[in-house]
View 1 (cartoon, rainbow, N blue to C red):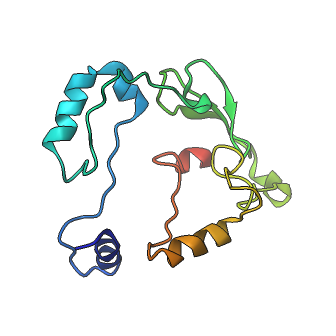
View 2 (view 1 turned 60 degrees about the vertical axis):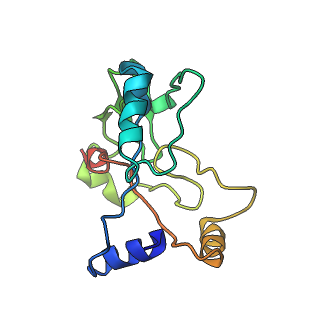
Amino acid sequence: MSKRERLLRAARFERPDRIPVTMGINNACWHHYPQEALEALMAEHPLLFPNFTPQLLPIKPAYAHWRIAGRLYTDTWGCVWETVENGITGAVSRPALPRWEAFDSYPPPDPETQNWWGRARLAAGVCAHRAGARVRECGDLVQGSLRHGHTFLTLS
């Protein structure tokens, strides 16, 4: 069963051969655990890591600027985030909308130019709609996402 068919069957509750999932190991894990142990885990689970090939060089994790301990970060919604552990997304320490009375004048970010953490990385002049059209032309499914696990923290 192809990835596309698996996704469509899951969305339609038509019993795909397995649950469509994309797995990854985040940089905080690469920083904390031995590389050999994580690579052994990936090698033992080819269904979860189908394109895995062991690395010849040591992996040195780089952290996104919103995942650096001790640093405050303001996202595109205006929420201020703090983290205490490198590589782990923190929590909202100051909400963008401290009072509901300010809701009517609150300007949300523009989805054409902003993503959840900052300026959208779109190719020169290419909007998300055109990028989606290119994905469809290749026979793939257009997919979107929300911040993993942190959508409701923005509402705090």
